[in-house]
Length: 94
Image (cartoon, rainbow, N blue to C red; front, side, top):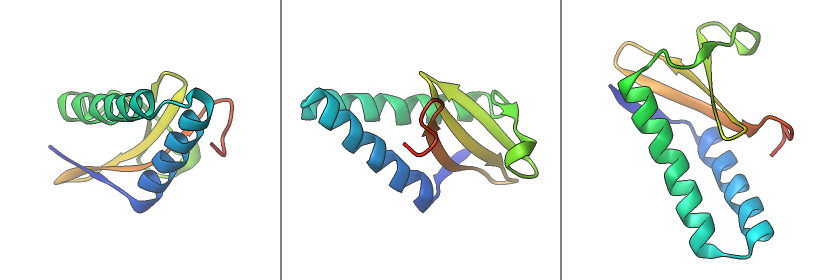
């Protein structure tokens, strides 16, 4: 099944990347971390689309996958999985 990312998800991922870079001051570390995070999302959801728990508090048919304190919200469509957004559990706006 194909994975699609919303502009909101991509924007949030950029914000997370910026935050990690400012914390680590390492472009290499930041790039590696973000790449591994995206790879985990794609591999997990293509292999096990229902891996995340139902998260109806965010909307109908929304699921939530947690990886290293980041929550990834997604929806399973007929032809693809739509990754809606990502946020850190203890920092909902980051």
